[in-house]
Length: 237
Image (cartoon, rainbow, N blue to C red; front, side, top):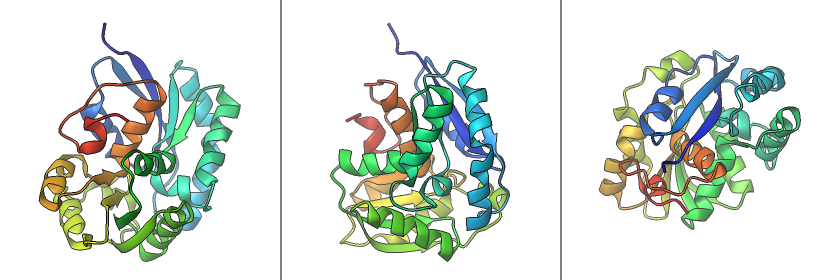
C-alpha cells in the first residue's frame, strides 16, 4: 500500500518556484495544498510583515485537513534569530491544531541528520539578509565558513533566475573547510542542480526547498527514498 498524505505549504505570495519544485519531487500519494503570505521585496521589513497574515492563512490550510503545515519560506523563518523558527511553528500549531514546521527548522534538522558542522552559504539575498541567515545558522551551532549572495531584492526577479545560477554560486563558495553547501531561498530554482553539484564537489548540497520537502515528509512519517535530488532525499534519516 502506497504512502499517502497532505502537505500544507505557506508560500510567499510572489514565489513562483517553491510549488513547482515540490510538485516535481513529492512521492505519489502525497498532495500539496498552498496558501500565500504577502511579500514582493526581500527586505527585513517586508519579511517581518509576512507574519501578519500567518494565522488566517494557516487556518485556511488546516480546513483542507492537511497532515502538516510548513512555512516554506527561508527568510521569514530565521528573521529574528535563535529559536524564531520554533516560535513560528508553535504559533501555527496553536491556531490550527496541526503539526507544523518551517524551512529553517528543516535545514537545522538536515544538518543533524548528515552530521554537518561547517557550511558554505550561498543565497539569492542581499548582503543584509544573507548576514541574518548566517547569524541564525551559527547561533544554532553550525559554522558558516564561506558565504556569498546574488544581491537580489525583487522576489519576482529571483524566481526568474536560471537554475545554473545556483550551480555556479555553489561552485564559487565551495571550500575545503565546508562539510556541505547550502543554497538559500525557496524562490531560487535549485532542485535540478543538487545532484550534479554534489557529484562535482563530493559533499552534500542542501537547497532550502529540498530541506522543506524533506522536513514536511519526515513530519508526516514518510520513510522512503526519493532519488535524483541529493543525499538528503535519497536516504531518509
